Image 1 (cartoon, rainbow, N blue to C red):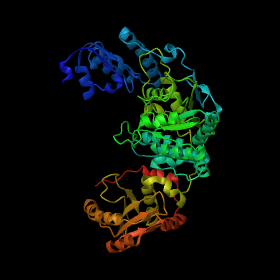
Image 2: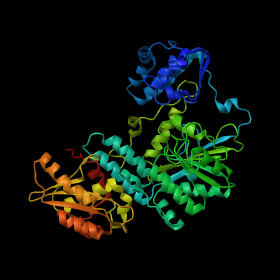
Image 3: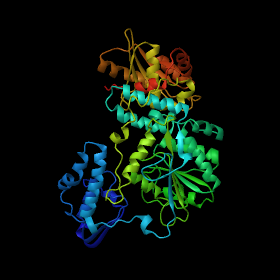
Image 4: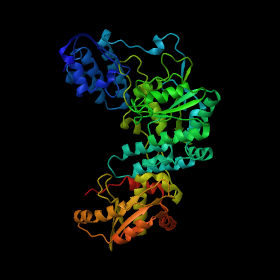
Length: 545
């Protein structure tokens, strides 16, 4: 309010995309400032939709594009009402150019390749030929699925085609994205932390995309250059950081949303301190970044190689991430790499190929005001889930060794599938969060069972806390009241090797059965569970009381 009392001569908004939503307090405060002249500075006038551009323009020159409803009817509705993707693409380009003309000289657009003399060359490489964005094909980025990846990928296709659940297609897209990175990442799964270089390579080799990426890192190492690897998945970020440390013997920092921008404690690492340390080290270096966290405010010109291991669905954010290295101060030619996961059958479309095509098409609007908008799930799913496109007839059976990598979410689905077979009854997963201490309800003709699952990453550890026993005991009454049934058995099941003496004593007191990895491995020999079984179990409807 104090700033709004002043009649300013000039008000300059840098990184103005932060007020793209006109309903936020930041945007309202910006519009309320009084000035003779307002300047909006941003690299992405459109991040999500044309509404972003209207908000910025309405701040710079109120009323020039009319009220939002008028603007929406003139520029947005014709695009959203288009019946086909081709028609929508053509309209987007046509309307984008019209909007650019209507804005006229009120908008100055600088493209650094055209405006900055002496800026080094930027070469973009991809793993598919004839990419719509004009990227050069590089055979080293053409990544064929591993055998395990191919099977799990096919299981996801089957899951979407056979599922009766609402939202199965959107869920399937996220599953395909995870499997395309590594099959163990499916549905919250994790990658084991390698202890040696050999262990790291073994895990890497289960993903065609990771394998080719690490081979590319070896080439960059030979050139003694620095590289940024962009990915969104935090579980993958952690694994890549540790794996690179073992394989290349270099410290690999991670910059993501958890990394502090400012720290009151001098000993705590910040984004700035991590980047400075990375830049000051001589020779080869790797830094892992989130394209979201690295979108603005960071300069990393010591690196001249960028690998987009996991692509952001928004081309504008992806371009911003690349520009952390391609900016004033960069003295070397910049190499931008897009590894693309492909199926061994070239006629089968993959998640990576489809996303690359869509992002490339959206990035080709050079003359329009529109900085390409985010790829929508509807566009991305096109052609991926056709029944004639893919049919997987097999699925890996899960072994005891696979359990640590499942993660706690899929471990619950695994336990539900296993116990349903063991007790020949219906298994229902409870809603995640607020489950009142129970993860699975087993309903049988003779007996009903309530189960809590405890997943551990290191099965050799003991469970020494009695909390799980007490929680499943406390959950009995609420579930009996809500479901109007009685439970004759309470179970705590874990992939842990053993429970402590104190936990066993507590379980006996509360009449709770404890099941460890020995029980699980014995039952798996009698009742095999596949990854495909888990997909359907994990995606099933959950119980909420």
